[in-house]
Length: 145
Image (tube, rainbow, N blue to C red; front, side):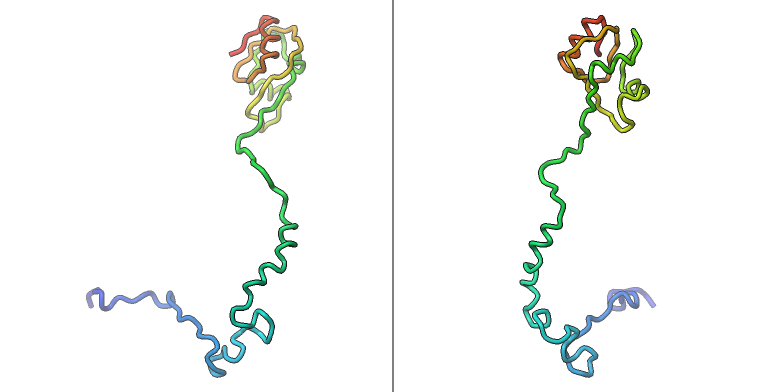
């Protein structure tokens, strides 16, 4: 038998008939039609305004997540004084800061902050630096890339 449009049919069991409720006692879903007895939920057109009943309590239970949350990680701030952990002439990068334990494992963006003074010559690269910290590092003979 050839496959033509007039003999196509869906796979057996893929299409089920919808259950006709409220069509007599013999149907299996007669009388109350599966809605129980009495009450707003059993009536025609009922259950619409029930949403408002517990709405206030529901809103109070939600966490208070207001405002904007950036998907970018904040910069980890390193005070200028903490760079004393480095030796003279050492390179300061994100990797070396992580090795010395000055930043966490997950910190990707780092900024050196502070306007104090430092007495070691450091080569800072791949790290953001504030204007005051930049002046202090360059005054000590260091460089920033």
